[in-house]
Amino acid sequence: MSPSPITLSPPDYLPPSFVLSGYEIRVVLGRGGFGVTYKALDRKNNQTVVIKEYFPAPEVMAVRRVRGFYLEPNDAQSAQEFAEGLSYFLKEAKFLTKFNHANIVPIMNFFPALGTAYFVMPYLEGETLDNIVASKPERKQTPREVMAWLDPILDGLQAVHARGILHRDIKPSNIFIQKNHNPVLIDFGAAGDVLAGQKVPLALTHGYAPPEQYSANIPQGPWTDIYSLGAVIYYVLSGLHLLSPQTRIGADPCEIIFKKLEHEHDQNLIKTMERCLKLNYQERIQGVAELRQALGSTINRSINPLPKPKNVIKPLIANKGSILLKIRSFKLKTINVIKETYLYLFKNIKHLITFLIVALIIVLFFKIILKVFS
Ligand SMILES: Nc1ncnc2c1ncn2[C@@H]1O[C@H](COP(=O)(O)OP(=O)(O)O)[C@@H](O)[C@H]1O
Ligand SMILES: [Mg+2]
Image (cartoon, rainbow, N blue to C red; front, side):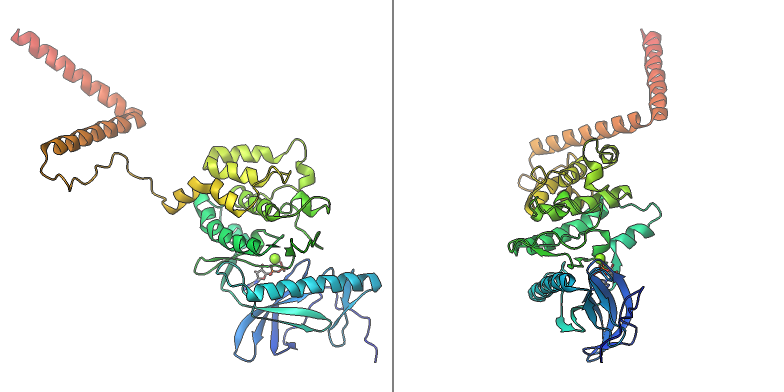
């Protein structure tokens, strides 16, 4: 019997309780450009999992038949594109299955079914960076909060790039912060193999995708993900999404925000972010190692957040009894006290005025004493 042409639209997804290869569908977590993400139950071990279904461009490329819920490409051309995309999807699933990194979402299983393919991940407890920022009253993060997720994400991304793979869809909703604060890069649906020359993906996110994702003539490489990371930093610090590359050509309206951020935050972090966001990929930071190097002082500062006390007297263990060292220590202590008093007075004008009045009284007092006794 031929399948009915009626589609489940919208939304087009597998219904709750549907059992697929031993996994029971619970709810839809998301609908991206490449497919549907479900929360599901692994019936074998009663474990909650996340299942990703390859289902790009619904309605345009493929439709889901009501009977049996299987996917069917719309026409011969769609069938070819669908098959090509599916092979990449499975390739990426294979890649992620072998991949083992604390900051990259792990893939436990993948299988073909219903005319398409699926991969299975553990269900992580936590929130996407997007939701975390949205739930904050000021809808922004501090540079220190940025470094807390950026540093580990760079670790994961570096490992992915080392295998010749690009993520190509880095954005706040694809950075997942686990309850234990460990950040994980998710959603490799747009991932591409640079070495295999896989070019323009089927979908991209405006504001996070660099010019080369809009054009097959500009090479993609690790710098492509660097641009998106720059856009994420821009978003979490400013609360604004970056404008798309077309809008930034010429007089870039984002420059005003760059200047504002430079004024408000660690200059090095903002300057580095700007270098990630260069429209010309050749002027951009080229990869994770370069980005780490550029962030250098910012990373150190966030790891060692408290400013080091100045003029710390080194322990005088070696020459404990030496009078000379004791004098040096006394000298340093005195300098410190004078410095601190100076800072204290000049930070607060009220204290400065009081200080001047007291000094004047003391001078006058000594003048009177001198006059009396001379
Ligand atoms: N492994 C996971 N554990 C828990 N939640 C997840 C997991 N993977 C994805 N999600 C949730 O599902 C949403 C959609 O997943 P994602 O992979 O980004 O697909 P898409 O953006 O294509 O819909 C995410 O924003 C996140 O909230
Ligand atoms: Mg996503």
